[in-house]
Length: 299
Image (cartoon, rainbow, N blue to C red; front, side, top):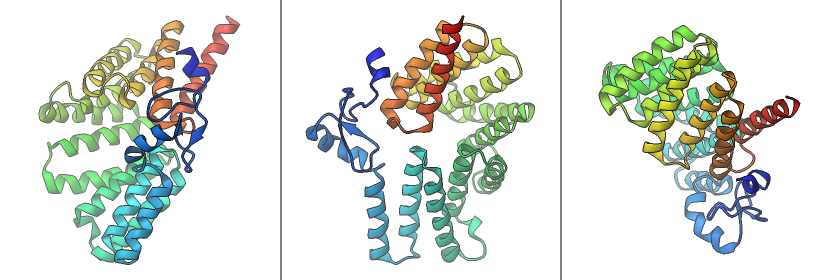
């Protein structure tokens, strides 16, 4: 693990560290051309150069204001968001919204395409720290979704979870817990108690408990979320990395520094494999580890 932590230029195909070759988009490193070719079918879904070409191809084939162009913009926006390139993602979503307004006219919210775009805006604005805008978009999506699919559907549960997350970010912990309790009830009913979306809700509830000093409840929530995520996604997944990081913060709060560091190191290694070196999630894990090591060194 120490080699990977010190030398993060990991091959996107085989996970070998210390690579020099990288894609022209500068997102992924490779140990050689063979690995680069093998990884291309997967990487082209995230490569900004390939996504820009897809948008141009759609415009050339369909015209500037066609639904296919909007869909290509959204695909590119979601990839930019995953890479932490939020301004570029927002521009893609705004252009997609402009096209949908042209297509659907005065009542765009009655169309599932426009509703889903509201959901993506909510995700993006939450990650950008624009919480009021995120909450507005998520409440808009919740209202539309309830009209289409009813009160206790999987989508409603997911949306309530997202709203709870935004309220958590705003420091409205009791309101957040209320929404998250409702989300957990719906998702457990529709998907089962060990589904990954239930783990996501437990992670957020654990954060609420941690913020309000209820550390035993916080740790229990994060440990259960980690257990479910390992079952649902495997040990080397983004979801497990998130659960490890969140459990690390609770352990840090309770003074268990060695345990916190072990969790953060595992999370950092996974984040680098999933996102590369330039993503905000990687920076967050690294910052937490650096602060902890400084604290341990001064102890």
